[in-house]
Image (tube, rainbow, N blue to C red; front, top):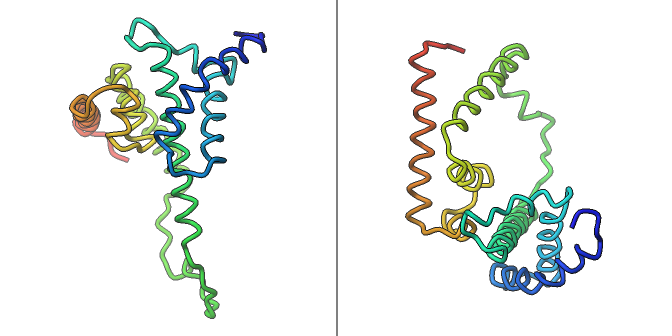
Amino acid sequence: MEGSEEARREFVRRYEPLVWRAVLTRLAHAPREDQEEVVANTFIALLGENATLLSRYNAPLGLSPESYIHRQAVLQGINRYRSLATVKRRKEVYLEADDSDVNPGDLLPDHRPDPEHSVMDREEVHMMLEQFKSRLTPALLLTFELLFVRELEPADVAAALGVTMDVVYTRKKRIVEALEGVLSARSRGGKTA
């Protein structure tokens, strides 16, 4: 589809009903504008940046193109649902003007590390994260992304990956074991901050 607007239009025309079904299932009670936004975001994610996400589709992994597109729509729906929940929570916070001139930050001691220490910590964390990721298979890395980076519920991860909850929990256990292995190796190395 690269460079062909007609091919992109045909792709959207062919798969729009599939995306709509996924969105209506996930966000049945959301306003129509939010549903439309999720549908649009799904196609933007799939076709944006020269269709980078769509090019990740790999037939030998056992997914049909429809399942892959459905999965992306479900992920966009989950992201939108979380976004709506966050906005709602923010609007529910009642901020009352305080008559005191005291800044609460002035009452608390500053425990922030000095800039040099922060840079060292960031480099160490980055190194440990790379070691951790190198221990994960692609399937475990994707599961880690969905569970711990995007903070999806295990049921949503299972739906997005097309696997059972048992598989998700097994992968989660392996991810935790890999992290414990990196932390254990670090503590045996005797490194101190």
